[in-house]
Image 1 (spheres, rainbow, N blue to C red):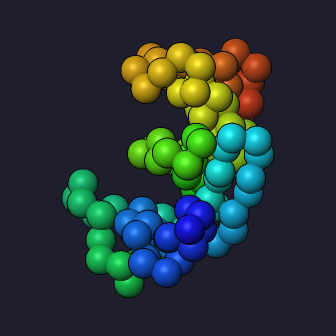
Image 2 (image 1 turned 180 degrees about the horizontal axis):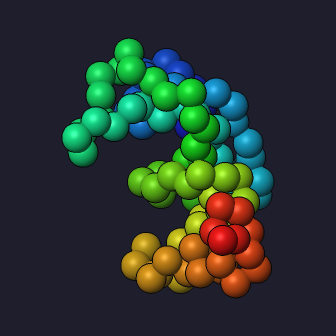
Image 3 (image 1 turned 90 degrees about the vertical axis):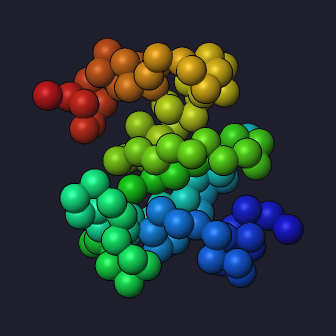
Length: 105
């Protein structure tokens, strides 16, 4: 069973409401509406934001991280794949270096 089927069938995506899936080589990206966070705690399943975020998997393994844009998600996943989980935010710094949104300010 692929990631998409596991998340849809078992509702095992606690971050929010899945919208759309993308496959790019070893990366699986899910576009989703995140749960609303109030006072540092994610709200119940019924309180879903209208905002969009992107969550990723590398070779089927959950990154346990999400990003604000598809570009930052791809950069973050590439950083995790090649520099490891404790990569010091290499994806963030790459996006800053090339002035990619939303870090282009």
